[in-house]
Length: 125
Image (tube, rainbow, N blue to C red):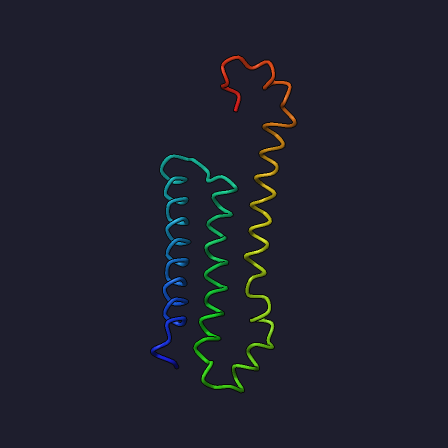
């Protein structure tokens, strides 16, 4: 293990931040649901999952950086599916967030445009 590597330290800090953010979002969503019956929105859940997916990707990069001293293991790891698919969950969640937001824009501004044209007080947003 390389102990004086700033990139390894940065990966470790980012991994801790992402896992902590995921757990905080999870705790807050469960707390609000149990105490007030408010279900988290789809975007809230997806942002929570985005933190988890980012933590996973950084975790894989942290592992790769950790074994960089052992060149055969490092090269084997870089050819594995773990390394090549480390960002795939994050990309999927980002696309889902994009789809949810595009659906909101479509429903609020394109589909219901006739309501907005006749709106005098602006309360239909």
